[in-house]
Amino acid sequence: MNKLVDHNTILACQKGKSTAFKLLYEGCAPYVLSIIKRYVNSSSDYKDLMQEIFARVFLKINSYDSSKGEFKFWLRRVSVNQCLMHYRDTKWKDKIVSIDSSLDKEEWSETPNFNLSKEEILQIISPMPSGYRVVFMMIVIDGYKHDEVAKELGITPETSRSQLTRAKKWLRKSMSEKPKELLYGLL
Figure 1 (cartoon, helix red, strand yellow):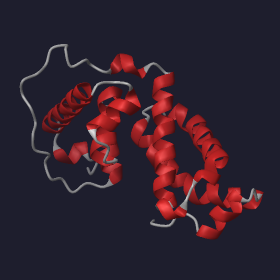
Figure 2: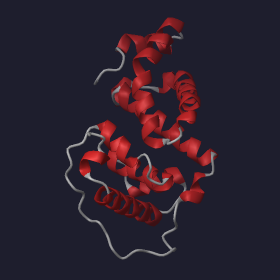
Figure 3: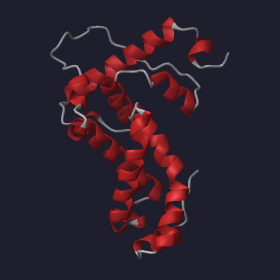
């Protein structure tokens, strides 16, 4: 799934061709939905976010420059940013635990090497508290740095680090409490 749509479709969108917008949507919708599912737990929000993301994509398509990178990465950035705006709008910050409140001394410094599919990872992290999940997704899955997460979410880098540590602890506890086969839904 390297190419979501061909370069000619993107150029046609930049020229305002309505048929190209339809092709772009059809080619990219599954990818955008997969991003939304990583960041948003409530399936009732998926449709609205899809509309918001594609509205933003269609309005900003002229800002895409193929010399600066692949369309897929530009689209991912737009999608993640829109998901983060959704969280800001729904007052999700209340779900983040401040670094000042009851710091745990125990750290989980090594990430276990599990060979899991994206679907299995999403199944495992879907019940994770949303503040933890957003930071985890941004850093572990999408490759953001703590400074970038802090800037995007309006928190401190220390809070980002704390949230990631707590997410890892949550994962460790979750995975130790359930038999591996049940956790992955393989039985």
